[in-house]
Amino acid sequence: MRTATAASAQVMSVPLRQDAGVIAMVGLAHMISHFSQLLLAPLFPWLKEAFNASYTELGFLMTLFFVVSCSVQAASGFLVDRLGPRPILFGGLALLGLAAFGFALSPTYGAMACSSVVAGIGNGVFHPVDYTLLNRKVSAPRLGHAYSFHGITGSLGWALAPALLVPLAIAFSWRVALAAAGGLAFAVMAVLWFNRGKLVLPAAVPARSTAPRAEGNFAFLQIPAVWMCFGFFFFYALVLSVIQAFAPEAARQLHGVPVALAALCLTVYMVCSAGGMVFGGFLAADSSRCERVVATGFGIAALIALAIGFTPVPALAVPALFGAMGFASGIAAPSRDLLVKRSSPDNATGRVYGVVYSGLDIGQAVSPLIFGSLMDRHQYRGVWLGLVLLQAILILSAFNVTRVRRTVLTPAAG
Picture: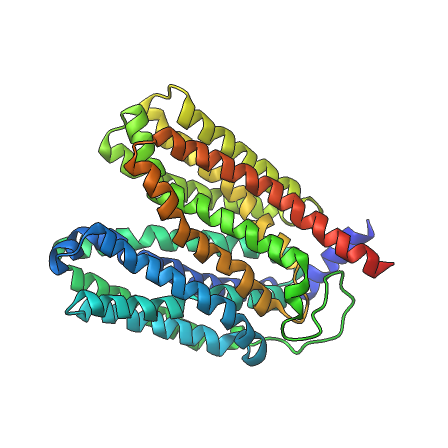
């Protein structure tokens, strides 16, 4: 009863408008980060012809992007903790905008690769920046909803990229499409600039916390739960990459799904995932059950994946199953982010999120090498079996993060 009363009092002390303003600005920036991750993939048919490049060469541009982003993400957390998130955020947005214009003006494949490096540097700052702002500025009872909205804007960014770029490429050219993407990045940067007051961190105040503390710049690396979180996000990225790149085609081959219907699967997954995040935000309001929410969400998603891969599913039902799988995974997302917060030292938020979320970039760089090989060998059921196993690993990882965290904190409390 005391806990509920304290939570209610905290909500009353922080105006909803103040929290909503921070959440909206951070979400808008996060949308552009995800939007920029899919700048090139929808335009591969045009780029292949323009540069006489193979799909392997075009795919390498994406791998280059994520490798650079991973390296920068781990390092940028230190800059966020030292300089604050606001200047780092504006720097990242500026680099994404410049990279988009660089893509649009590139005369050669080598120039495209250079722009991929610039884009990777810009993309690498967002998770340390975003979660530092959310954790430090949003009141605790609304934090689950903040994580939910953050995830939703990321999904919308992925959905927006093909929806904007492909029609512009058809109507005008791929260069016009990429120039428009650069203009969008700078437009969002302008919006954030006019609302920059919402992105200033409050002065740090001493407070009692159950989170571990990092006494030196690299002391947080000695916290086992940080590395467990890193592993969790690595496997999560493998799951996401499989669904984005290979699962629709593998389902099409297994169940005779029409091409147009198969192309709809990813869109349905992302939209339903966003809906699941809304519901998951309410569940994450109670931090004591976040492990169970993560386990339930990914457990249901794994069962659906098992059904798609190994049962005679009607072709027309496949997009609906993708939607159900996306909704279940979306429910787990806010609680997933809460797991990381509970394992983060109060004085090293940027550094922890930089290292932990670099697991996302590594997973997205590794996944095509593993599952692309299965697709080349026509092992379509192997793709779905791999997806089920990865989701099972996510469930175990969520409970292991908590187990390791409690093992560390219990002696400290004693």
